Amino acid sequence: MSHLCPVCGYDGLEAPPYDAKGNPSHEICSCCGFEFGYDDQSQGDSFSDYRKKWLAEGAKWFDPACKPENWSLKEQLKRIGIQR
Ligand SMILES: [Zn+2]
Image (cartoon, rainbow, N blue to C red; front, top):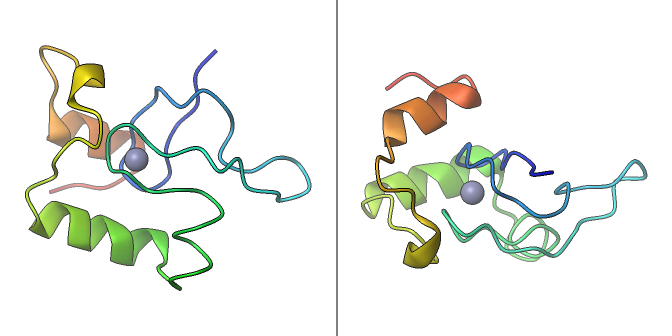
């Protein structure tokens, strides 16, 4: 079972970003590189701020090995309701 990243829409997270009590998974998204429990608190970045920065830097994959062959940034962002 995979989970959706609320920052970039990647659906390959191994754990839910936050559990029922709101505890972060500390997983790093293979796509946008957001770390749940770190980037959201320590640096004060909201999802949208981080997303903006990530997109501005060219939407690079944190772990390019995880990138699907026919990957579409547009389709992925649609999953979290973002139209570009
Ligand atoms: Zn992500």
